[in-house]
Length: 123
Image (cartoon, rainbow, N blue to C red):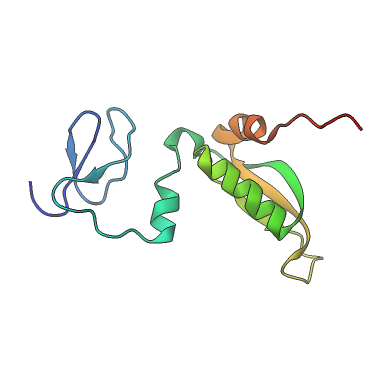
C-alpha cells in the first residue's frame, strides 16, 4: 500500500486519499500504514459527521437566544453525527447577542429534533 492510501477499518477495502468514507459500509476511512498525521480541528469535526445526515436542503430545527446556546446545541448534534449551522438575524448587530436559527440538512432533521428533545421539569 502506498503512502496516502486509506483503508476501511471494517471491511479492509482501500481507497485513495481523496475519499472520506467506505462506499461499501459507510465507515470513516483511516490511514493504512504508520501513524495518522495530526488532524486539524476542522477535520476532526468533519469525521464525526454521518453521511446519511448530510443530505438535502437546510431546515430549521431550533431557534436559540444567543451564540453560546447555539454553539452548545450544535456541539450536541455533532456528537450524534448531525452537521449543523447557525444563521443569525440581520437585525442583530452584536456578534454574540440575538436569536439564531439552528439549521441541519433535511436528512438529519428528524434525528436532530430527537437529539434536542428533553423533558422539562414540572414548575
